[in-house]
Length: 311
Length: 311
Image 1 (cartoon, each protein chain N blue to C red):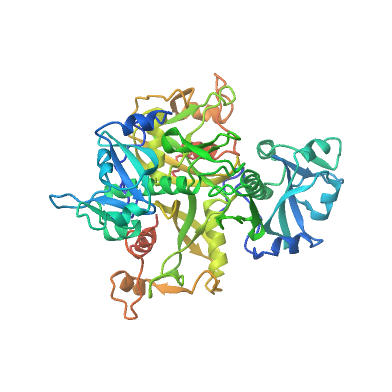
Image 2 (cartoon, each protein chain N blue to C red):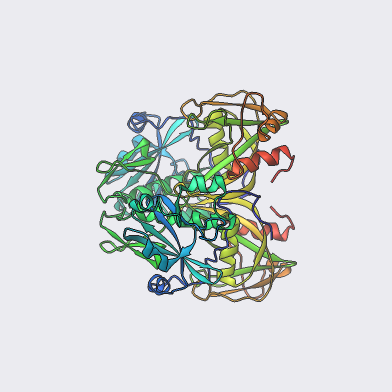
């Protein structure tokens, strides 16, 4: 069975989502199981368990250990099982992250830093992404978009129901296309003003209602760089839990070369020869230019171009 | 430039989404343009314009012609341009569909029937999908999911803003994986109880937060049929505006054969030899079994299996 590319963030998971039915009582039943584990997120910040005996921090702590953390449980979801034990996600008040600052048994760290730094085992990253996405969705969807009334969690934390108009709401995942546009030995990379200095990456954007993946790639490249795109080939995908996107990675053939850059979206974009990209990948670029780290799917799209592989 | 497979529903569009900026005044400005066109949907039902001189009905009517239709405009969005003319989507009260029943100049017809019957030119299908998805989203998102207050349309109909908590809400598109699972000369097809009698199709399901496309394929096949899946290859994608999904079509290699069918999801599922599938495709199956029509991406996944092509 093929695995995601080495280091690709949030793409690997040992979570078994299929083992436990998500019936109405499932969450309460498994939360009472003394063997249950949970991911804990305080506001937006995961709290990791640091083993007393040393070794990697882990995103999964015994659920009964929640007693050691301050603040009430705001939301909970049953993600599935982990090595046969129920695996939950628990949202605590934001204050819990500060409260554990002096406790050597815990580490509160934002999710990007966890992923970029490889702080938890890679197989836990997909689990963290799932927990973060579902809990963020709960936090921002306490009311019914259809009628404005408060909603209540259902289906083990994977649905919210409106008591007033009976609408059912499901967690949201937003498809994003991210593409490496190539032309012969060159590829198109751009940078947003918010990127770290010297960083150039793939173009990307949200897919719009009514679009295919391929048309979304063509539209975004046309909008941001004024370039026409012919063939589009899917490469790979990645969950990106900020707050809850699905990155759909593609490689795309440019039909022309002259750039018209949308300066509201991009600070810069230009064609890079593969030799220059190779220097960037190796952190040996004379101008200090860099590509994104392996945690980002853009890294793997660029690497596949350097290796001459297409999808 | 490669085109979507012949007949694939909602995948072709001549809509240019990039031509007009979606600033705060864009909708009002272009709605006042006498050359503007609009797709019209009454509640859930598109209203087509039937040319007096004969020929195909069209989903695009001159915006000033809205005066001929009863009921008020509930929502409007600026989709882009069509042959250089502003192209809008307009939501009318559901009553407008019944009101035009006797008028030979209009045809009110549900979107599935339009797509399956090829009622409008194929290049208009993607436009209809976009209009339906965006307008359905407006209709069901009049309130802020974050605080419950009413929201107001913004960004030419591609955003809703909350005046109370300042949250911005964007149209939603739900990724769905749909996959043909194969093993040698056999493929796995299933039927839901709601399907027309004799119809068998690919397995499918919503991608969950924190999943890759490939993991979602593996989970759904495990859940619905008890089959392990190894290699997953992307095939193609399709907008599916009921109400607003992105179908991500894949082919997948089965690792085993013994089926355990989830009877809550599927009425039946079994392995079909490619010779039997060929009879189904040609509507010559002795038992009257059938595959989905070309409008569905499942048709094209099955066809690619019959043709021995993989993605």
